Amino acid sequence: MSNLFWLSDEQMARLGPFFPKSHGRPRVDDRRVLSGIIFINRNGLRWRDAPQEYGPPKTLYNRWKRWSEMGVFARIFEGLAAEAVEPTTIMIDATYLKAHRTASSLRSKKGGGGRLIGRTKGGMNTKLHAVTDTKGRPIRFFMSAGQVSDYTGAAALLGGLPAAQWLLADRGYDADWFREALQDKGIRACIPGRKARKIPVKYDKRRYKRRSRIEIMFGRLKDWRRVATRYDRCPKVFLSAVALAATVLFWL
Image (tube, rainbow, N blue to C red; front, side):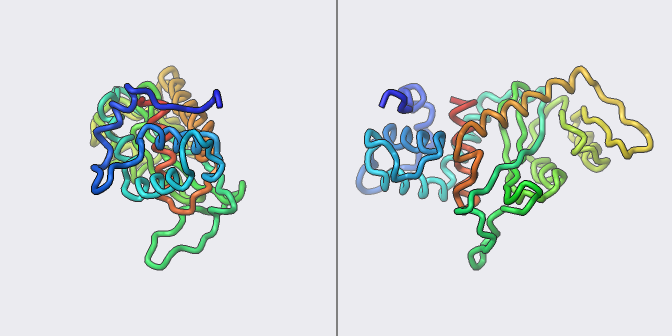
């Protein structure tokens, strides 16, 4: 097939340091398997529909499942993002990701933390919260159920914000506690005030227009079918799909 995806030698060289060490028998060709995993995630295919050029589908699925549970894809994303981040101005926002019927069971495993799927006006959804750098490239992710407030995501991501001069966000993040927390970190907030505020909040409208970059980032992530539609029940596995898409799109 002419439209197959293959990682280049340069990309493999950047990914290699994050791979877990092989114990016992050597692993199957990393380049072939990872290229197949990326192809499946980008096109939203079932594992058994993987092109034969990538090898046995069972091999692809086992590597995907095992490395997702080990947090390998999340570490790759965080490691590459940390190497080239430009945090002069950062942005925060959230988006909804539709949960497919195969993932939308609300029953959780005994002792587990739930599926992170909630019911909203648009149906069953997961909410993805993200922080991007100056260029709109993602540097942090947090996942919650769809009905969870943006404030919850902001509180979860607050501790991991890099040193920056400005933070851009829409009025959904207009809260006094959030503004004060940013001020304590030495970050200036460019956030429009809610219409219900008695005293209007001044903000830099020209600078605020740059927030479109995080919207573009979400749009590019949703071009990957297994990100736009959540097929995985396990939140950790689904977050790995998001991290893998962000890595390939923005950091490789």
